[in-house]
Length: 317
Ligand code: 2P0
Image (tube, rainbow, N blue to C red; front, side):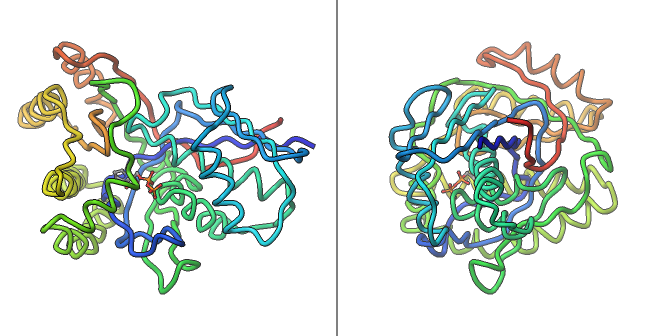
C-alpha cells in the first residue's frame, strides 16, 4: 500500500531561533506563522525491504539519515520504509522545505502505520523532525506555544487562510543551498550570542501582540511586530561568533524598498529566515505594486507570488 501526503511550507512572522532540548527538538520560545499555498511537498511512503529515502528523485544522503533517526526516536516500532519526497520549489534555500517536508512525512507515516494521531500529536511528531514543521500541520495563521514538556509544545491554528487572505511576494536573491543549516546556526547562537537570552525573553510579548493584530485584522500592527521579530532574530544571528550573515546586499535593498513603499501607503512588510530571500507579506490590493517594484531591483533573481494555504493532508497516491 502506498500513502501520499501533501504539505506547504510556512513563513514565521514571530520567529523561532534556538532550542532548549536537542533530543526532543524543543524550541526555546514560541512562534507564529502563515502557511503558504502553491509551494508544495508531496511525500509517498510504503513498506519496503529496507529504509530508503528519495529527495526530488535522488538518494537522500544526510537527509535520509536525519529522517530515519527521527522516526526511530519517535515511534516505538516500525517497518522499513520507502519514502519518495518531492518539492516543487528550491530545497534548503531558506524557503522552509524542512517544514513542509516533515509535516507531509508525519501525516503520511501516521496514515500508513494506522497510528490514528490527532492533529496535535501530528504537530508534535513533525516538530521533533523540524521545529517549523509543527506549524505546517495547520493552514492559515498558526501559533506554536511552549508547553510544559515536549508532548505539549505544539502548534494550533489561529485563523484559516480565507479569514484573512494575505499575499506573499518572495524575492529570491540567491538560489542554491544555504551556507549554514538552521539547526547548526541556532546552536551557535545559543552558545555564543550575547543577545540570545534577551531574544528568547522578548518572544512571548511579541506573540501576544501578533495574535491580537491577527484577531483584529490590524495589518499595521502585524507589520510592526513581525518586522521587529525578524530583525531581532537577525541581530542574534549576526552577533553569534562567528557571525551568521544570511543577508545579502540585495536582501537589504529589498527591505529598504518595501519600507519606502509602506511610507508611500502600500500595505506590505518584510520578513527573512535563515537565508538571503526576502518574503514580503501584503494585503492583496498592494501585492501587484510590491511585485513590480521588487522586480526592478538589481540582485533579485526570481520573484514568486503565493497566497495562504491549508494544512498537511492526504492526497491520492
Ligand atoms: C522559523 N526558522 O520560525 C525560523 C526562522 C528559520 C528562521 O524554523 O533545526 O528547519 O529543523 O528545528 O525548523 C528553520 O529552522 O529548524 C526555522 P530545526 P527549522 O521559521
